[in-house]
Image (cartoon, rainbow, N blue to C red; front, side):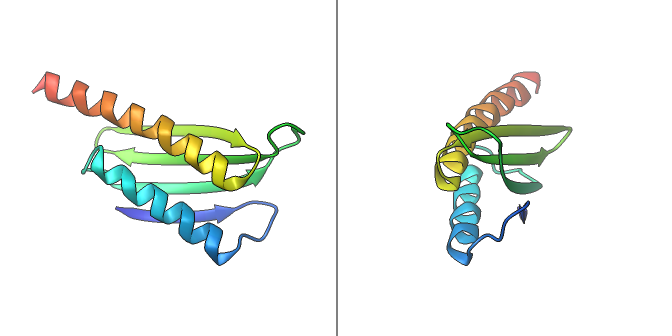
Length: 99
């Protein structure tokens, strides 16, 4: 799986970047045919959850998009990974049902 990382309107630390990439790599255990994943982190105007993580996951014949917010970027990426894993499981079940 090819992974790209983007930090909008702020400078991401190397640790944060590595944490995000490592987290996304774990999605392979839910669906092993992921072609590409874009990670986009950006601040939001919300006082409650000021950090947003967006995952754009390309799989055969579909693009899954997940946006989650959190108090920290780590929390936001964790929430996004949980949502993405549910979507990938659902997509995988649907693909196997059609075959």
